[in-house]
Amino acid sequence: DAKTTQPPSMDCAEGRAANLPCNHSTISGNEYVYWYRQIHSQGPQYIIHGLKNNETNEMASLIITEDRKSSTLILPHATLRDTAVYYCIVRVYVGSARQLTFGSGTQLTVLP
Amino acid sequence: DADVTQTPRNRITKTGKRIMLECSQTKGHDRMYWYRQDPGLGLRLIYYSFDVKDINKGEISDGYSVSRQAQAKFSLSLESAIPNQTALYFCATSGGADEKLFFGSGTQLSVL
Image (cartoon, rainbow over all chains, first blue to last red; front, top):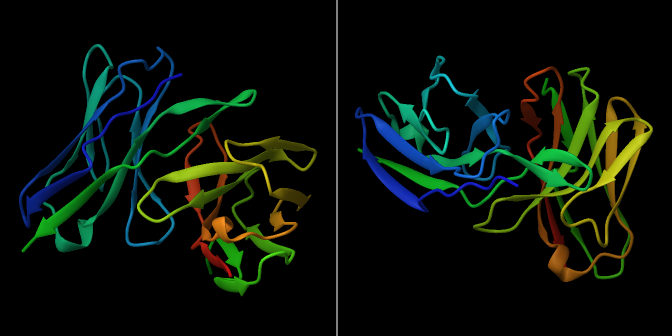
């Protein structure tokens, strides 16, 4: 089953772009990559997801490599409120169904 | 009002007590989930339900049970609480083709 690897922590200056990498080298051809974030101990919040094409929404952009083995979440103009743990996740089998399971994520700290 | 509501927000109980955490949703989603989060770690799936008659074990179901009383309600029970079940518990729902997860605000449970 596909797993993801993320750096445990990153810093970013306020107003600059934050680029969060994720490796998912064993992802299958029809699996989406999802990104969520968790601020303090709140419930995780959906950010974006994609299959093979780059995606953009009001929160972020997602760049997926052509071989789909890695992706990068881009927050174009990071603010202090973007300080959070960011999770890159794919579905893995839990019992008989594929479900979203969360690893440790990347702690992004936006510095003033 | 929140789309996914968890009660209680905080609970302190003693070892051996039975406790129930409740989750209700107004999103009309069929799928509901219970996750557990320990300090500094990601979320682990306890149980999930695809509809009222479909309950499935997650990664860490031992010591827990669930009940899907209606499409909108999914409760988690600890039959005999133990201290290592002290954690932050999240309920989530999903629906639609993209299967995005929507989380509640969490229940902080402390077992003394």
